Length: 221
Image (cartoon, rainbow, N blue to C red):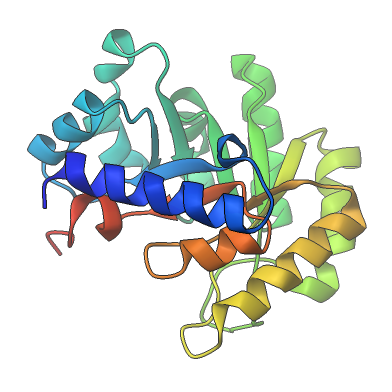
């Protein structure tokens, strides 16, 4: 199917999942994960009215979106991949939301750079809900203290939590855990769910879902 048809399908699934869980479809935002996609598909998505996109790498995102900013004033870019501290300056200048806040060094660097640029971006803390050693994200046992550090010491605008469940576990379990962690901190925004499981994530309370192949088809690599 075309990107337009895929978007229609994903949006309908979002609407159905939201209604099934007693929520308004407007409460769920679709983040189209555009990493490593051909320019033609990006143009199709833009032509279809999609304005919220997720990117994993700062440099790739700069190449793709820097010039398009002038053309699409309502564009919203989410950084959904790991952020190295040496890329913080570029990330703060380009993105609208940082979803992968996961360590004190990064929190300090973001705080300083946002003050320098006068761009105080909303952030999500990435939680490693499965405590997987190979995966980025703050451990659940450290989440409360880390949240306090980010907000009280760094002055960051932490809006919510983000997770990527372990591939071998039922994703709904981790979505429910993330919702509980957020509620304990008084946070309402949840970025969770990808192409294979975003409907379950919506049922668990997600208000941002990150869909790549469901919108664009398989990546180039």
